[in-house]
Every structure is written in C-alpha cells, then in structure tokens.
Image (tube, helix red, strand yellow):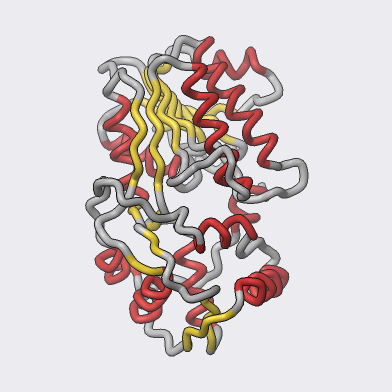
Length: 305
C-alpha cells in the first residue's frame, strides 16, 4: 500500500464496506466509495462519493483511476427485482476489469467461507465464480472469506435477537448441531487492510476465536437479551415456512433456501487459523441490552432510497 494516493471501497455506507472505510480513515488513508446510495453520507467530507456507474464502464474507470487499492464488497443476498446472482457476477467482473484498466495496484475482495463452483446454493456458487474471475483479471489480489459476521450494523444477529424478544418459541432447523465461527466485522476490515500492503495473491478465511453450534449461538443471544423464548427443533421446511410468514409480516426477506442450506451444511464453519480477536460473547455482553429491539430490514437498507 503506497503512502500517498487513495483507496476505493464499494458500499462505504453499508456493513462490511463501511467497516473497511472506517479502518482506512482511522489509518489516515483517503477514501473514495462507489455506492448505489450516494446521498447517505450527507456532507461528510471524509469520503469522496461516486455512483457505481455499472452501465458506463468509462465513467467507472475514471472513478477508479489513481487508487492504490480497490476493496470489493459488492454482492447480493437474494434475487429482488432486476437484482440477481447472475447480474452480481457480471457486475463483479466489470468492477475488476475497470480497476485493472484504471491501473489499480491491488484488489482486495470480500468473499465467503467455503465457496464452491459446483455448490447447489447460488450464493456460494456465485462467490466461487467471482473469485476465479478476480484471479484471471488482476495479478495482485487478495480474497478474504468471512464466516458469519457480527458487529455494528449487523442484520443476522440483530434479527435473531428480535425474534427471541418477541416470540415464545424459536425454531431451530434440524438438530442445530451444525457449527459456525462468527467473526467481528471490524476484524474482517483489519484483515482486508492488512492484506492490501502485500503484492502476492492471497486467500484467507476470516474466522473468530470461538466455535459454536447454531443452537449454542442462539442460546448465547437469548441469554444476552434476557429472552425466555423456548428453543424448539423443527423440520427445515417448517423453518422456511415460518421465516416466509414472518418475512411477509415485516415486509422483508428473513431467510432464503440457500442461506438455510449453507448454514446446515456448515458453510459458515472453517477450521482455518483464527484471524479475528473479538469474542462473540464479549460483544454480546456489550450490546445485549439493545440488540434486537428493532427489526433490521435488508430491503430497506439495500433497495430503498
């Protein structure tokens, strides 16, 4: 990473991209963001805001010119309107190619644990395809593969807490013994920025110091928020129906088939060396009093002005 110049981060107003932007600013870096929501930063002069311009490749190249490192967090959770996994793959390739044309020195891409080009789950299959595209586009790249991410701005853990606060029963799909290694979003950001200082290709899993079964994870959240909700085991199909019903209630997508399938097949688990230092239980102790008091909507965050 050069001492002069600046870095470009996708989605500096969102979750992982926001954590990376904060870490860069903390280190005194100049930051530019590519975003679909340019009005959200307001008048803050710390970040230079540019629209994605995914339909104007030349403008996209101009937005990336002069950058030392491009941090790519671009992806989608589910299909919505014109948004699809196929489109996300296409746009990722466009971003990588534009960064290459602009002369960006290094690309750091945020992926996911256990991507697989042959996966039956489109989320994990698409992530693997994007990783392959990156390696074929840029000679200097790093891929960071987070497991389940928690921290400021979190949706998943917040909404588990929201369910535990409001319903007498919490449905755990299957036996609940499938493992996860949650990692703090700030630890993911620190790893991304650290890898930007290197030149050689690198792929690292971003995993925290603790391993839980999914049921243990829910129990920790229940204890932290003071819930008396009873945990029950249900057929995965019942869990999906319940999630769909609650999704209609809150006008959001609570859980998708590929998320449930990935969780139950331990896609959110890795036995790689620990990279994150923040313990999930310590974070819960700090935020438990407020966690889940309000529902966090994926649709409102990413698809509404």
